[in-house]
Amino acid sequence: MSDLFQALGSGLLVGLVYSLLGLCIVIVYKASEAFNFAVGEFMVTGSFLFYIIFFDLHFPFLLAFPLGLAAAAAAGALIETVTIRPLIGRSPIAMTIITLGLAFFIRACLQLIFGSHSYSFFLELPDISIDAGELLFLSDPLWAGILALLTFCLVMFFLFRTRWGLAVRATSENQAKAMAFGINAKMILLIVWAASSACIAVAGIMISNFGALSTMSSIVGLRAIPVVLIGGMDSIGGALAGGIIVGICESLVGAYIEPMGLTGSKEVAPYILLLAVVLIRPYGLFGTVRIERV
Amino acid sequence: MLAVENLRVVYHDVISVLNGISLNLEEGELLVIIGANGAGKTTLLRAVSGMIDFYDGDIIEGDIKLRGSSIRGMDTVGIMKHHGLTYVMEDRPVFWYLTIEENLGAAAFSRWSGNVKADMEKAYQYFPPLRGLARKKAGYASGGEQQMLAIAMALMTQPRILLLDEPSLGLAPLITEELFAIIKRLNESGISVMLVEQNASAALEIGTKGYVMELGRIVLEGKADELAANKDVREFYLGSGEKARKSYRDAKRYKRRKRWL
Image (cartoon, rainbow over all chains, first blue to last red; front, side, top):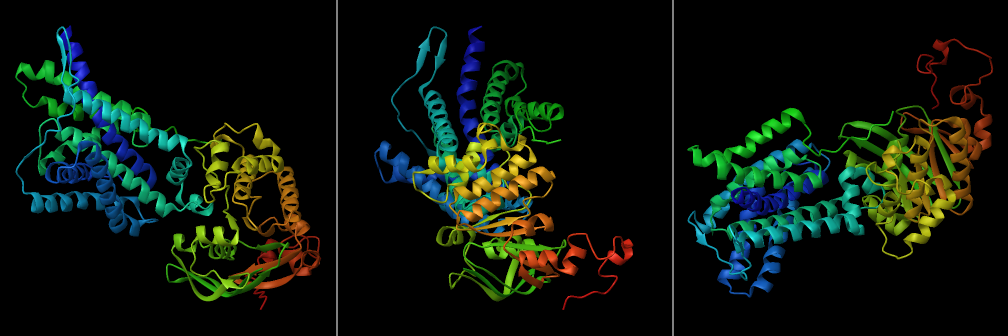
């Protein structure tokens, strides 16, 4: 029985990080109708920016963390200005394909700059491991879960309690209407991309902290795809639920099915789940119910 | 106050929609623009409000002046902030997935003053039905309520000039009457209004001045009551010509090769 709780608990912690990745895709999708396939590369970029500030320049963590996020936000804003802004008002498919290209471009740039070897990455956060009888939760995943949840709540607060968040939600619904009522849609898109880039960096730093950072870490970004598709592409609550579902599914499969000799099934399980969910509910579990007036 | 001078607008670099339009909106006026579908009425409002870029249109000739200074090339937010001009798009431009209250709040985004609440109160006074719906999603409101909300949202931007694009679209006659009475009241409170309408008789009733547009040109202008009495306007837009009844073929003006200019 304790195996089960252990698996559920660790799945939940990783799932919260996935949720954060999912949230970043969802807010960008809602605002600019483009699916950001470059999420893994955004993650690695943010992590490397933090790496430079924290490990190379030796800033204290409490300063390096916000600085790293600010740098990641600036990178996101730059990418938006160069690649996405010229396409405002055009086909969202074009933007989505741009992000696919961006993924390869950014990965290649990072490999060029940092090489393809691994960088060791230990944050040495205070030890908060929980060791209760047969259950053991290590400090790093706990920190990852907590910080991811905090960031998630912060984004939610911004979206639903501030006037800027209101403007973001209005622009997400319709750019033309928002512009007609005096909301600068271009600026809102810039903010959304920058914020999403910073949040992705939080997830990236936490995931790198589990082991090491390399340009190949961007594979984790692929996990965000089942997260948002299971939860629903345009649902923020769905991102949270989808992330937790994917995390738990992964760790359950890791605990019960992999030992049966099916090595690697852990990696595939979320996608099999994704197939099942999408077959039954094509808009995801929490996809928006379209308002239809009759 | 607002002067459009010889304006030419082209979509996608090839489709010419406005072919040299000039008109004037004086302070405190309620200007009515009527015309058939495709005459360029909506394009005119888009050009004046700076939205034309978004629809891939270009002003290739002419100028738009507000109080003497050209606003050609300014973006929508700038025009709204500096000149108090707000454009209410056609087909009830409200945010469906936000509540009525959030809609009003979103429309107040462009200014930073703290008296948003007071303005909201004022908007509710003009449109009492909205007050009871404040927490309801706008998408579930009725057509009339949505159109009221759209104009209430425009009021939140504190406009001095209001461009209204077919507020009566798809509304019952009684609601239209009510809405037009409120537009008249807004105009009397000091807001200059430019009203584009298909419902010519109702619009000319509340308007002070009117223009008739056809194929991207102004073909007729005059005081609203003069226009309403004009023989051609009566026939084409008000549906009551000299003869009691004409055959449908005769009513199609292109077949008759009738040209205004």
